[in-house]
Image (cartoon, rainbow, N blue to C red; front, side, top):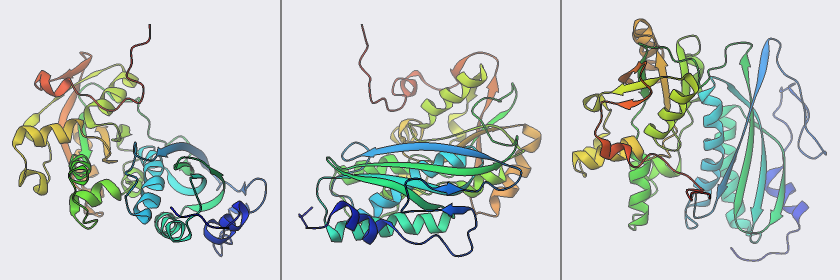
Length: 323
């Protein structure tokens, strides 16, 4: 990034501030004051989540700035999707090494495009100087008592996943190998993940538990199982395998991407066997597959798959063993 004479307040005014969307009475006081004042819809509960994206940990430093903006918001919105919540508002905390107008304009465009498409109004935030770090807090609404949660799975429920996990992990691998075409379907899956907000909302009342796949399917399944105090038996043959992965990787590598890759932001849910067809019918309106890959069992842990897949479960920022 190149240096510029823009002050912090010039930067906010030029790239990150705008009047609240016309007709949105839910934003009583928006961007530009000390706090936003928001009006919750009748009968709704508030869902809140925060995500931090750090350069060269969560995204490459040379990624397109529009993709960085999109991705920073998408990973936060994915948490709302996992709860079945409707996205409403967000705040952005942006730490920059320098104020580069071209980079900022592209970043803001990527962030704003997804925000507008998701119905999520940017209502506040902060800008500071330092290593490139992006913090996004999202706020959503969910009908009272209907939020999807990690706990709630029942013995006999099916374990199912939306879309085609594994593509984002291979996209990151391709980027690291020098592929730079942002329209490549695997790179796009990594750089511009799509939060499954509509899918989460449609699964309310059917899914008995839910989580988004950010750390890897097995790692996040374990979080769901721990919350429910149960286990799962998976069927390797049932895993949804994306065509671009099958075309270029050996079957074992594809399965590793699907089970342990991470960064997919698909939804992993449990659903009663009798409700699977209805859940699939609802998501068909989004042209989004919902694939059953196993079943909840009373024995804790993950069963039915080779131990080599269980050795690499997910991402941990602090893997060191504390003494």
